[in-house]
Length: 142
Length: 138
Image (cartoon, rainbow over all chains, first blue to last red):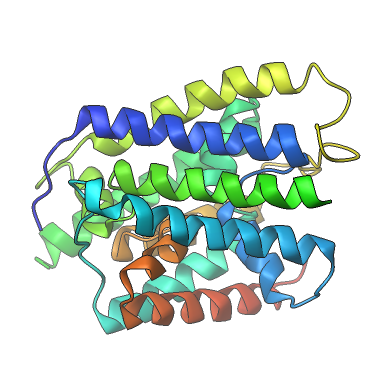
């Protein structure tokens, strides 16, 4: 699927993600890391922390549902095929658990705190992902 | 407690809106960013730059306070090591992200599109996270 370069929508969306991360830290003292929130929900410990995490995810899905009609790039999305969803999901789940998050936790929140660990993590996963796409799309011709 | 939960709900709403407006909930847009040799779409870089810029400034003012507005303390990561676990995790995550175009946030947000494949991805992601528990701590 070809997608159009959308700089203004990108900047606006990115700024909103930043606002969300600041809100969660300033209000509740928490890092807006999606994989960590997901993993903690998996433990099914129904304490007070379960509720705020569940509400974050409810908000995440509702925020997407509400803005979808106005999102030029995401009115429809190109979902992975079944086999890619299974393999990709396993790898993403395994990797994020091993390194405690990546895109939002390290990439946005970690780099914003000038964390060396998060900066190294972000560079590493970017390189791995770029090599993966090169192999699947150009070497294997996907 | 109530205000903390309300904060989490609003933060989630704004995060979801950000992922959707920027197009990052769309795996094709992510994969095209990673595809320098093909249908390159640089949007993700701007999302990242804007996200980090806002967070950096916001965090700066937030951390002038001793505690969050509605909580007892800031819960900040206590691991600082750049170790094998981090690098292997980042590489494995990067491969999965490059294959599928999904990371955890967009994968959860994509439930809004009511497609079963989102659920398949999330179940696989849960299995992967559980499998990581079998890896011994260093």
